[in-house]
Length: 401
Image (tube, rainbow, N blue to C red; front, side, top):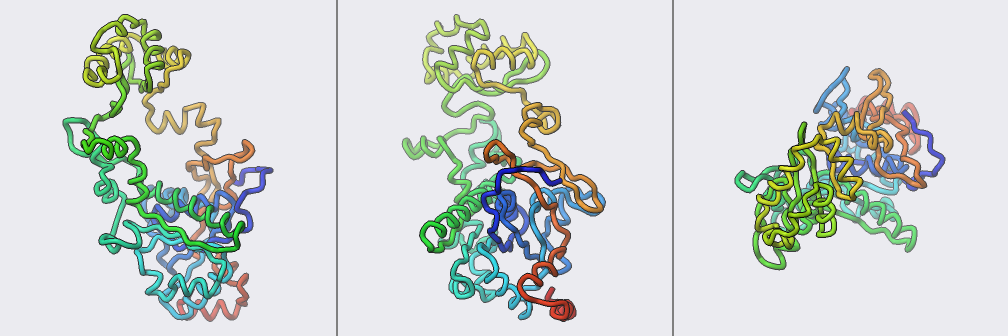
């Protein structure tokens, strides 16, 4: 599906040479593609991105791959062959940006150090995603999201107080690193436009996730006291969390004393403000179980829908604890915001996927290209860099493409 949008996309005219695979890198290049850049995805002949074979596969198409690789063109290229590297050199000269999520040194070992990249294209911007960074004792270690969540302390903060550490369900370090990498590339493009100088940008899974530790890190650094796991409760605010209702559960987040007062009024529980153990947030934290029990004894008397209306009308942040069907399919706000879109894929029909959340001038970003078939755009891109049919046939016979 191509979404009509009169607002020019901000990265229109920018070409990105995409060497990424799996999650973090493809999420970065997907964002750049959503913003209007032309993404030329390099994939190994006959193999491609491993995600092509992962997740739910319908009629031969991975919806996981389709979701992360929209707005991209696929070029099948064997970078282990001399001819493949020659073509790659020409593509570097043709593009504005190169993004990768290799381990440090892999691109150098292929003969494409930063110095070589600059010699091929003095205006090239490189965006890299690594597991642990490009320096330091861990730089050569393999990394996945699960390891990043563990080693950064992020996992230690999740789970109930009497249970083990828990990972966050979505691959949060991959996604945050991809988001940071896209921000880095956009910033480098702006810097190049302003100064004429090209800079490279890099981010690691662990660095990205460490930056998300929020108030937990701030409080630890201030006190040297390790935070405890609090489950759905807030580490520094009470009452706060998930409360049972007459028919399900509701999330309630009174983030300060003013909102706490509104909550008590909405619950017809103003007498609680007179109790000495609940006078301040600090005291409520010390008596967290007790104040939460008082709140829940009242929320259990009415339905979730009732409390969502009453509390929102009172200015108390709250919401139902939705599953994905309730959130992505049935929620009217997500429908209004195009949280889920359908993109037509030739031979596979419409694929539902999460839509781009960014808007410009209140217009959503558009998906102009479905995820590509492996090598679908090889000939188109090679012709653009000056190769004819005979050249392309010769490269095919050699296994370079």
